Image 1 (tube, rainbow, N blue to C red):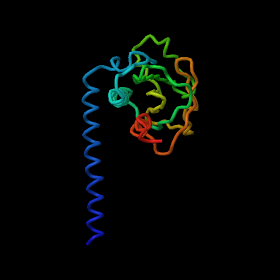
Image 2: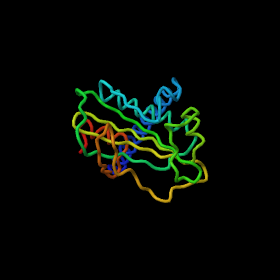
Image 3: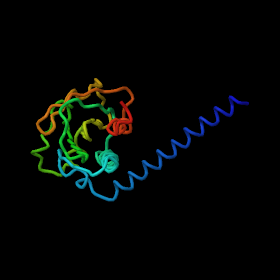
Image 4: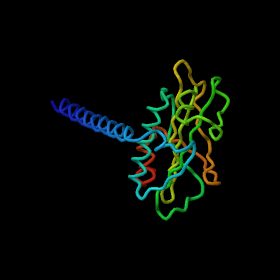
Length: 194
């Protein structure tokens, strides 16, 4: 009887966590629908600052939801990483950098998004492979959160990730802890996760 109660309690916890996650996902989807693609992605590369880590967290989640729904591709891979490099001086604000990449039909030639003559969303929809990377800096810590998307009928031959980033002229090396996603990355920024 005790084992059954313990198992039932564990199932209830996972069930409640799953419901909360679904509701949060719907909340982000509703927020993403409130604005067009350019609101979240004014260009292929940009920087924002936020007053609180919670605002930055919400922005990254909603922007990632908007990106995923707009590019019309399946998420194929992506990880979150700790960044090692110089601290970003920002008076305790949260700094969020973002860049987007796109690849053509053979998947190996980068499309120069600085020279496109169509809306960014259109170019991303017409590309075979696209990625979005958020670089988030808070106090003395930084993380990267990346997602890669592929058109139907294509697959990645390797699961390689970014080894380093250059952000505002500074080099940051990546370290990919096992099991990290947005939650763990922001937990690290808030010093709740090592």
